[in-house]
Length: 311
Ligand code: AMP
Ligand code: FES
Ligand code: ZN
Ligand code: ZN
Image 1 (tube, helix red, strand yellow):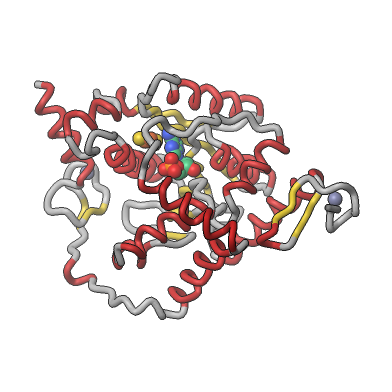
Image 2 (cartoon, rainbow, N blue to C red; image 1 turned 120 degrees about the horizontal axis):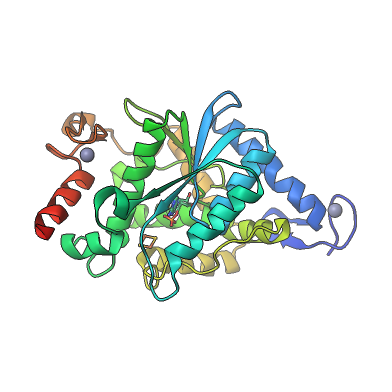
């Protein structure tokens, strides 16, 4: 297989795009495509301040690398979750994120959930019973809350995450199976900002996971190979594996699934009525973030409950 641009030996063949590229041209192609998606979905411009949430994994570190190369003003945020799982997961991912920031002379904010709230994610999960034995639900809630909080408190216009096509297609698959209309209406590359919340964007949402792995490796980015130790056996991994079966038989299926959804949503053909009147959005009296749950937001309630149990 030869590179489509220069005819040299290709380093990657993307069947779904009918495109093969050598390392040099692949490392150009990924940022070019990212820039195209940023413009197409009107994510942000070069005057805006961007905060990228970096987990130490290949996607978010590559995203940071790409946005800096494209000339955007972008700082990083690492959230310390206190997850060990026998592989020192949080410690190792923090170390790799800090090294990346140092090597590239970038500004990184580090927020440790345990220092901030007195309890790590596994501790919160134990006391709240929300995780059904696994802390993933608690972790997701805390990550979202903390990313939103830091972005708002530090005055960033935009919060960017490293979700790739495999992540987005798996979420879409789950939302479709459950016909979760509220979530379907909110899913997409951009979630507009509101009072108290920065705009949220996913610039990598059209790249296959495999493409991001190839980018990180070819670029020489050191990232944490392990998945979170709690992710094993999770629903999202099962959905990803199911979609991969489809993709093997029909290259491009994952991308078509996601893009057809976005197209239908854009032209108002999702056949879901917005029912805003049922959902009363108000500011959480404790943290100020918008919420639809009565009184405190789910995160603040979880922290209160866990604190009460410790006392
Ligand atoms: P996940 O929820 O683990 O699939 O991660 C999705 C995205 O959330 C990543 O690409 C990151 O942008 C962000 N993220 C996940 N974990 C962290 C973390 N510990 N600190 C900062 N950002 C994170
Ligand atoms: Fe949060 Fe795994 S439980 S990353
Ligand atoms: Zn080439
Ligand atoms: Zn709150």
